[in-house]
Length: 283
Ligand SMILES: C[S@@+](CC[C@H](N)C(=O)[O-])C[C@H]1O[C@@H](n2cnc3c(N)ncnc32)[C@H](O)[C@@H]1O
Image 1 (tube, rainbow, N blue to C red):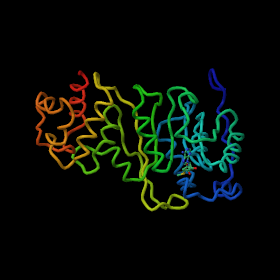
Image 2: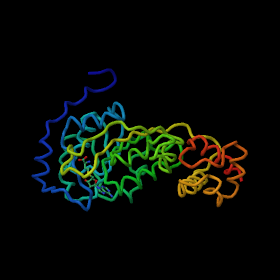
Image 3: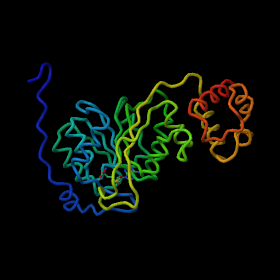
Image 4: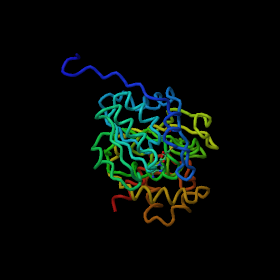
């Protein structure tokens, strides 16, 4: 016995994921963006990205046959998983039975559930999702009130999308998503994943992005920052004095901050967008 607690339970032995997929007839659906990860060592490495999960709560979106789910459960997490494909639910219920009191399975659309109501605050979000679902969910999670209800995000994306999230100023991927992800959070690519790791393999390479909340800069309203970056990057080849013309007060704010109006959007660091938005948030 450990002091004040119980011995961790030995992880139950589970059938290989291929067998789970075959037994439950989980032929990958293109419409649901299903590309499954079956390599359990790789899955364990992804589940380790948020840090030690023993006793932590995890919200998983799109568990599918449960590969990433079982990795998080083996690491000792309490997992709430939302899956849209009804065919996957019996396989996930089997996993819940193998890890008593550790897994709650919800059949539903992640775009429609209210995760903090399901999981409470301080959860680690884990997801390997289709791009068309993953990006809107990410934007929603990054737009939450700060500090957010989640403790970290560990999300698989197409590599090109991952590059746009972590892009430094001055690079071709730098844009609205980079500013949104970086103005009050730290975002990095934690792992690149070759397309051949998926069944079936997608057309492009993938990468896992890890995001943790940082201090929110004071006096900045997010809608103001978004209006600014929408205008600036909406015409990214133009000089700021042209692209920001339609944003009331923006040209005066450039001058007040000593930001050269001849610069283009992609040369302006996140800290300058924040400073501009702070001035414009005053009004
Ligand atoms: C790329 S697969 C990943 C499956 C599994 N996590 C893995 O890594 O092998 C994406 C999963 O997300 C599910 N999914 C797609 N759209 C969803 C949505 N709107 N809400 C919840 N799950 C969704 C799919 O059914 C599928 O199981």
